[in-house]
Image (tube, rainbow, N blue to C red; front, top):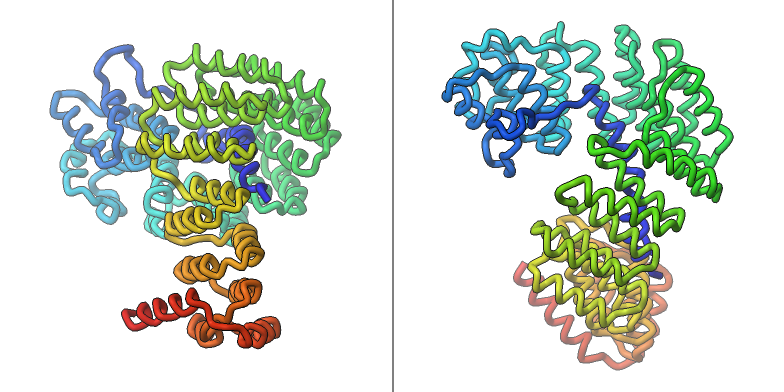
Length: 546
């Protein structure tokens, strides 16, 4: 029953190795290499000014104009480097502004994309800022992230023919893959093949990612054959293939891939070792997993910060407490401040290693240094308390969250719903369930949770609770025949007759089945409950108001 609680912990702990892998792929999606925007020690630089714009509403354009007004020169390579760093930090709005600034005044797509009247005031004099196809590719990617798929496609269509080449097509393919649009991605790949744009492994890597994401592993061999006809695989290709081996639990195939990498003289990176360790761990090949993990640990550096979170998760999966704590200490000495996601990773790891007191200390530490109020961090401890049947601690911890001003998320409410369901405290179950459903714009129904709540209400003959649940589900657009049948079974258990159920079902556009008719017939011989009358009249008032 508490699978969702365990998932909250397990997902938080293991997602970092998976997310680290996908992040590494993402870093090579549009461009290769990396740079540093800081530069110059403590000097005042354009990079420092733009990186200090913490909030999206602060305009990068104004900062660039001010820099120019102070007599400084803005160079294209400098903007490119800054944009690269902004993209790494997922500050896409500022990065997009930088690209808008860099566009020549007479660019055919410029006017359509300029939303701030001051963007191009100074660009007419920037004759040296000639944009290359790769710049348009990055620009397309940023537009997709900020304004969505349709805007990205429109941008691509508006590009001059000479700029709609391999780089732009690869960027658009990446957008299709991110949006899981298989048909469009495959059609574009075919077009790129016709145009001779498949001379690098990048496009094939995008398609590999798509097939892996959709578990369409049968498409992988043909794709690899096409890749080998056009170009050579790179380390990302091999890492993706290792991911396929992990999904198929195929150690032999994975080790053959390592041999091929060695033959091709392609160096293994930390993602290679992370994926391999994960596979060995799944197959309980502990010695091999420990060996690759040690090798991976040697690769961890400040430049590849996400490696540390992956190491934490992998050591945790092996049950190696010392290894997990050693990595955490390395992180604390290597970086000035830990991020919320890193605290999330470590706390979930410690919980998984059954060191709840240490997890509580880490949470207190996070609470003292982070002002984000990121609910994902406390949700890990909340899930741990509930999973350990410690509802008093869970309730106390929830109150602590509230006092600290942390706004509960859907997961918070759902965890509490499950917790109180175990305790048979149905009034609190319905309260937190209502909060959960109301906390999201569109509720993706958790059928298992709904079924368990209905079952408990039926067992108790709790007709007031069943009626309240029906209202919550109706407001969420989730009423069906089984929900009404559960309501009728609850009335039957209580020995009471509900009012006008058939009429209510008709109004909710829900069909009666054979069980519904039998239950209505059964309960019609019972006396009408006051609860049914109350909800009947409340429903009628609501209908008249509507």
